[in-house]
Length: 620
Image (tube, rainbow, N blue to C red; front, side, top):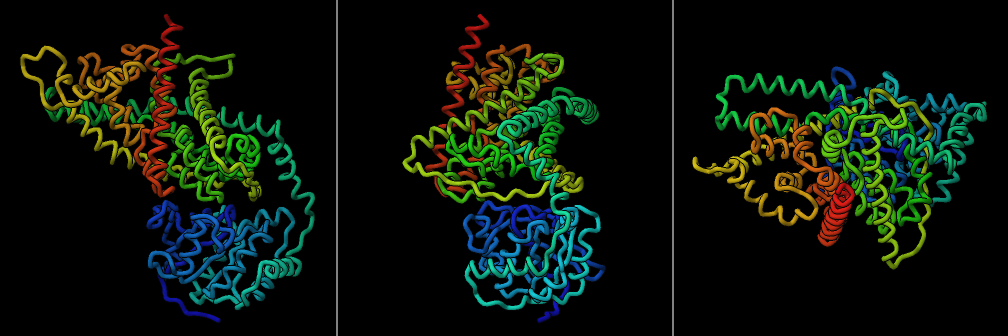
C-alpha cells in the first residue's frame, strides 16, 4: 500500500541501542538540530531538520533506543507512546525509519516486526553495512523488502554520503505501510526471524573477518588485562586534562586580560560601573571560562570511548566488582556519564530495569566527579600542588586529580555497599547487555558532541553564572561602607556580614568567610564557586592583590590544610540544585531528594573536618 505524503512532515528514527541511530540522525540533520527533554520526564529528545531536496524537507525525531514496545524502562515507554500517538497529545509520526545494525540482524529484526504491527508507513535502514561487508555478511535487501512489504535500504552513518539511499527513498514521498501480520506470540516471531535470516542473510569468511573483534574482546574483557587497560585509560585521561589543556588555558587567560583592559579603558576607575565590569564580571566569568579546554578534553575521551563501542565492555568487565558493592554493571555507563555531569548520568539510569538498582545508582551518581568540579579542582591543585614530574613519567598535578576522581569512585562504591547491606531485598540481578561491534569513532559525531558541550558550558557562563556573578557583586558592594569606616569595604556589605556569620559553622573545617560566601552561589552550579571567589577577592583586596591571578592570591592567603579541606568538600557536597531537582523528578520523591542532600552534606563536612584536622596536625 502506498501513501502520498506532502512535504515537511515529521518522521521518527527508531531502533535498538547501539544501532548507530544517533549517528544517522546527526548525518541527516547536521547542525540543524535541537536537544531538549520530553514533556514531564527527563528523557532526552532530539529533533532536527533534514533537507531532502530543494522542495522537500523533514522534521526528524530521534527516539530513545528500545528493544521492544513492551516497555521495561522510562525511555522505552516514551518511544512506545510517541509511536502510538499516546504521548501528551502528540500526533503519530507520519513515517517510521527503523534503524538496524546490519551485523546483528537477529536481534534487530524482532523489534522491526513489532513495529510493522503498528500499521504505520515504514522504511528499514540497514546501518553499518560497511562493517557487515568486512565481516563477510551478505544481505538480500530486495528479498527482505518483498517479505516485509516496505523499502529496505543500506546506510553507513559514518560516511559523508552514507545516507543517500535513505534520502532517495524519502524524496519519493510515497511511503508504504508494511504487509500486515497477525498478532503473534514471541515464539512465532522468533521463528519468523529465524526463517528470514536463513533466506536473506549469508556469510562468507566469517572466521577471518570477526577475528579482530574476538582478539580485542579476549584482551579487553579479561579480568586481569581488561581491568589494567581500563585503569590505564582513565589514568591517561586525567593526565591529559592537565597536560594538554595548559597552553590553551594560558591563551584564554591572556585573551581575557586583553579584553578586560580594552573594555575598562574608557571607564573611570573607582566608579560603580568600573567595579561591576572589572571586579565583578571579568574577575568572575574569566576565572570560569579558562577551564573550558579541560572540560572539552574530558568530554573528548568520553565520546571516543562511547563511539568506539568500548563502554558496554567496560560495564561488563566491572559487573562483578559493582555487584559486590550493591550495583550492577549496567550502572557503569550512567556513572561514567556523571563524570561529565550528574544530570545526564541520573537520566541514563532509565536503562536500569530493576527499581532497586536504579535507585542506588541515582543516589551515588552525584559522587562522581562531574566537569563542574573541574574548575575548583584545577584552581586549587595549580595553586598548592607543584608542577613537577614523578618517576620521570607522570605529572604530579595529574596524579592528584586522578586521586580525587578515584576518591569519588571509591566513595560511591562504599555508599552503594552500605545501601545494599541495609536493604531487605538481597536478591541477585543478572546483567544482560548487548556488546556492539568495535568501530572507529566518526570525527564528525565527536566534533558535534564537543560543540554541543561547549555551547552548553558557554550558555551556563552567559546565563546562570553571569547572573549570579552580577548578583554577588551587588551583595559585595551594597550597602557601601561609611566614609569613616576603617575596615575593608566588603566587610560592611551584605556578603561580608553573611560570610562572617556562617563562617562560625565552617571554621572547624578550615574555611574562611570568603570561601563561605563562594559556597552559596555555588549551590546553583559548582563552577560558580570559582567565579565567586574571583569576585570576592577582587573586591576585598588591595590594587596589588587585584592584579594577581586568583590562584596566586589564594596560595598566599590560604594554608595547605584549608585547600585540602576544600578539595575534600567538593568530592562529596551536592552543590548543584539542578542535580537535586533531577533526583526529585526521576524518583518522584521529595524524601529521596532530602536524603541525598543530608547524606552528601554530612559526608562532605565529616571528610573536610578529618582532612583539615589531620593535615594541620601533620604539618605542625
